[in-house]
Length: 101
Image (cartoon, rainbow, N blue to C red):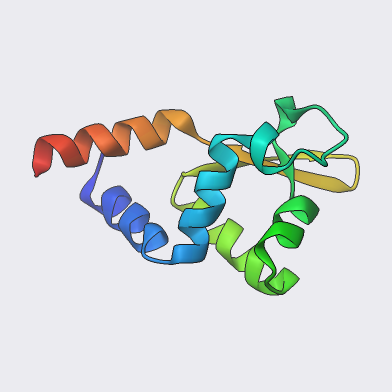
């Protein structure tokens, strides 16, 4: 993992709302029980918006930041966009931090 990737992740994690989103996506069935579609594709952006209680533009910005940092992946299914955690990047980041610090 490069220093630039680490810095991007740290900046993304600096915001509590983004940390909340990552936490919710860790256990999607518990955090979003009202979602009617399977959790295989992730969580619909509308569900995240409703849970966060922030404006759609703010949530979209947070999701974009997390995705640019590599912490989330997205998948478009029809008109809907679904997000899920990128567990490989999260594991690589935590291993890097554990070794570096």
